[in-house]
Length: 81
Image (cartoon, rainbow, N blue to C red):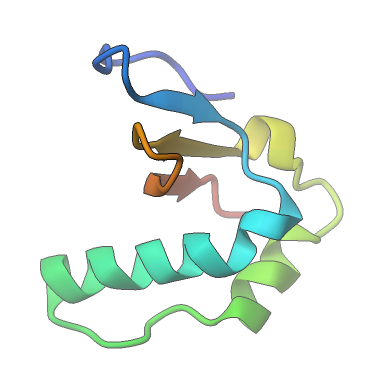
């Protein structure tokens, strides 16, 4: 379960990820890692999809998306199994 640590501006919304968010989430993970670690394509749709479908992994409680005002994913996070 995620804990609230900060307050987002009201124009941003949060919600759990769904399997339909997989490709966009992986893209966001890779953008972040490219920026933070100067590493390209660290995550693949296949790897994250497999993890998200692992028994015991619950998208509703183990993932969180932050959506920008236009509905695009601004941040994606998950609890690794």
